[in-house]
Structures are given as structure tokens and as C-alpha cells.
Image (tube, rainbow, N blue to C red; front, side, top):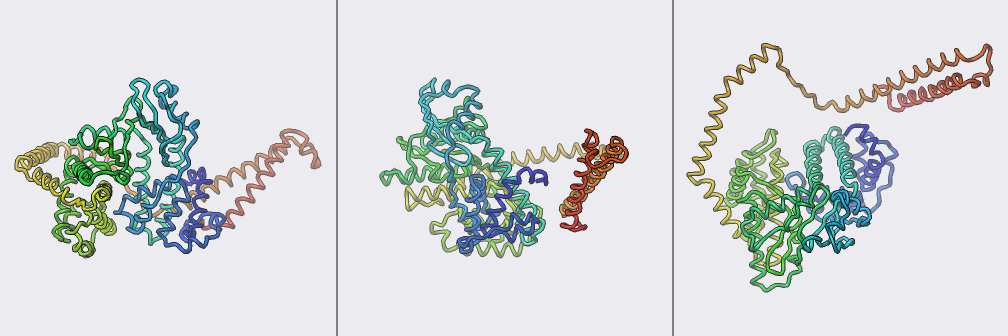
Length: 558
């Protein structure tokens, strides 16, 4: 975020800094060189009685819907956030007031390009659900008479969220550069990743496409489904889908056998999504699952979905196998193969920490301990040791934990491992099938052969560019952001000084050319040119004083 961008969001930035100081983070912000007036607020006693994780959650709640959403997304990233913080962030709830329908109606009309009454009848203007990004209404399609859920994005929310993310990014970047203890956490990358996820959720067409794709590839249509999407009405700020009548698992009153069946159905569907199809609902908690009157499960709210490639699913099978065999060395070896980062890893230290996690779960692994919890703890250990895996692994761990919680709500004896086992076995059969292995090797051979054929041409082009002097070397300097800011400040002063000198000189010329001989003070204001010249003199004096004050206040070295 550039300085100009920060100034354009100065009012919101000051609000954010004020809340951070009130919650006890003023000592950290003091490192950023922000205006002292922003940091001079009293820290309430209640903040002093809370631990740092509680204060972070309280800060996000105080700062409003964007920050609550930021915390909720971050709670699904156990690879970059410690467990105590994850647990606090899970308590975040979007406590947002509904926007009046008159304002939401403007968005609805803009997306439909007409009055909503042309397509909907019985449109209930009282929202059935309110979130930080959108509001959901119940309506009826005029043409077919089908009841639908109409999700409308809050007006101007994208601009507000983008501004907040920019401010967070600027603050975090400054902290990363100036507070050495925070550098190992790579906070700028964390903010960039979480911010990207939030911006993607602002596009409702992605959510609609996710639900539609699930219905296409779902093999258990008689037991599980997603709401039908009405693509003619769905776009970036509007999502229209089938209205689902049902109850959440926690409110369902079912016979024991039916409850057990539905628990198995949910677990079976999620593991098929993760292990076999590679596309899965990343947040299947109780609020996002409905039990319909005909005994089916409906997965709603597809705004957050994960995707695993074939190699990622094979990695997952290897990881589960290593965990089950309680083999820290194998866990580390598997993780190293899928690592995205280029940081040098201390494998001995990593193996020790992985071994500690496995020992913690060893006595529980065969007695109903959640697979997702083990994966989450391992992901955090990997991240702390420089092994950064794809975000989708965190999402799948969260999905497993969520569906297990739903399963145990329906069936207290629900065991996710018995559900997972046949899917993992099927994945391994697919992986080690001789025909599939030969196909994979054949494609690899073709790829290598193609590259080998292209190699002479690539070498020839390289030397041709070298001969023509077209080879360029790109150099990137790091750690000079502060020097850049100092240079920018010095340049601004120089430009202001030049403008001041020009104004002073031009004013003197203007007054000398138009004033009479031996004038008194009033004569200097008698004509328009001399009046402008005198005003220029005064403005030059003011600018000169400001420059001198800025130099004295900040020092010549800045």
C-alpha cells in the first residue's frame, strides 16, 4: 500500500489504529512511526485482563464485518496460526445489522437490469439471514412458481473490504520490516493469502458454480445434494438458488437408525469429495447442512470450496499412512515432497516436533480421535518449520473436523475412520493399478521427449539473444523500503521548496512591474496583479515556515 493510498483511507486507518491501541497493541504500533495523536488513547482495564488471543478476537469484533470475516477465514488456516488463536477465532460471529431493503433493492435492480417484480413474486423484503457480505431473502419465481433463496451483496461492500485489506496489508508490511521478532511468521504473505480468499467470496458466481459442479459430479444424488442454481439470475453480486426446507442436524428429531444413516451419508460424501473427486465443500458444519423431509442431506453455502489435484490426493494417502504407522520420519519425508516454500528446513528439528505431535495422539488415534485434529497440528508444525503446503490441505482438515462434529451430533458413536478407510483403499488401488502406472509413465516419457526435442532450438535461441545483446539480468533489492520512504519524503520537501521559491520570485516580479513609485502598503493592493503578487508573498512565507518546521521536527536525516 502506497503512502498516498494510506492518506486516502486516513479516517478508516485512524479508526483501526485507535481500536488496536485500546486493545493493548499500542507498543507494537509505536514502531511504525504513526502520528502520536493516533496512539495516545487509554487502554481499558478489561483488555489488560485478557490474554493476547482474546484481545485479538475482541479487536476484530470491534473493527466490524470485514475484520470478522478476515478472522473467520484465518481460523481455517492452522498452518499459519497457532491453535489458541484458532480456537478464539472460531468464536467470531458476524453480528451485523441488516441493510434496509431500499438499499439492497438498488443492487438487485442493477444486477437484473430491471425491476425485480418482473421475475419474482411474493418477495419477502425481510431477510432470512444476514452476513457480513450479503443478505438472503425468500421469494418465488414468477415463471415457474418455485420458491427460491435470493442472496444479494451489500451495497459498496467490495470497496470497503478492499480498503480495509489494504490498510491491514500496509500495517503488517511495516511490522514485518521493523519488528524482527515477527519476521518468521511471514505476516505479509498471510494477509495476502487471506485477503485473496475474502475477495473471491465477493464473487457470488463462484459460489454458484461450486454448487452446480458438486451436483454434476456427486454420485450419491439420492442421499446428498446441493441447492439447484438458477444461472439466468446469478452473477457477481446476486445468487439465486433453490429454497431448501429442512432442519439443521442439531435440531433434527430422528429415530436412532435414521440418525446413524445420515451421519454415515455425510461422512461418506465428504470423503468421496476429498479423496476421489478432489473437489469438496470446505465448511460442512451444522449450519451449512440441512436435513430435508425426504431424508436427504443438503450442503448449502458453497462460498468456500477446496480442490486437490491427483498428486495432492496421493500425498494425503501417504500422510494418513505415516500418521497411522506413527512414523515421524515418514511424515517429514512426505511433507518435504509437497512443500511449496524454498526455505531451508532443519529436518532433525522438524522430525522431533512431528514425533512430539504423534506421541500426543498415539494413545488416542485408535480410540476415536479426529483425523482432522492431527492433520491441523501437523500443518502448524510444518508451517513453523518453513514447510508451507497448499491452503487446500487446511481446508480439508477443517472439513473433516466439521463433518465429524455433525456426525457425532447425529450419532455419538460415529467414527470417521471407518468411513475414510474404504475411500483411502480405493485411492491406493487407483494409484498403484499397473495400467494407470504405465499410463503415467508413458505421459512422463512423452513430456520428457518433447522437451528433449525442443532443447537444441532453445539453446540456439539463447546464444542468438546473447550475440544480439538482448540478454537482461533482473536484480531485486530487498530491505530498502525504509530508504525509499526517506527518499520520497526528501523529494517531496525539495519539490515544495522549489514551488515556494518560484512563487516568491514570480510574486516579486508581479509586484515590481505593477506597483507605482514610492508606494505605501495600500497601493500594493490597488490593482489585481499586485494583489495576486502580495498573496503569493504570504503563501510563500507560510510554505517556507512549514518546510522549516518539518525539517526541525523530523530531523535532517529523514
